[in-house]
Image (cartoon, rainbow, N blue to C red; front, side, top):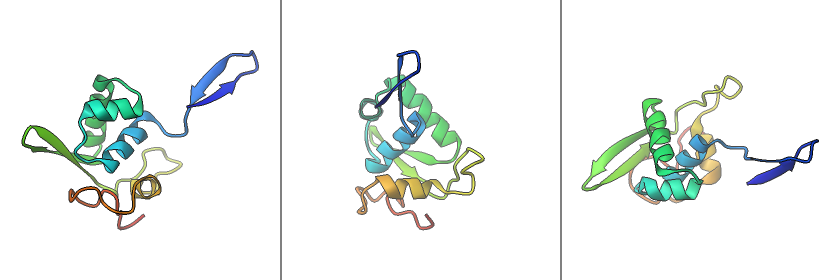
Length: 116
């Protein structure tokens, strides 16, 4: 995490991507990951990861499918960013920057957005 020293000598940690972005990328890299593992990768609690996944699912960015005792996630790369400054861009462009070029599963167009 980047650390910035403020004018008063205090330090603040920040990153360019939100936890929602980090969770989306973690799931894109491993669509069958347990939320416990996603939370560890992102640096949030498991409960926070669950809430973020619920937000992303409600927003239409991902779909959760039950496979046996686990969940498998499929990301819709055609979803648009929520902030007005980037609303004309699809999240598939972000996924293309940070995910492998070869898919890690057959769960859909996670790593290969068609319209990035």
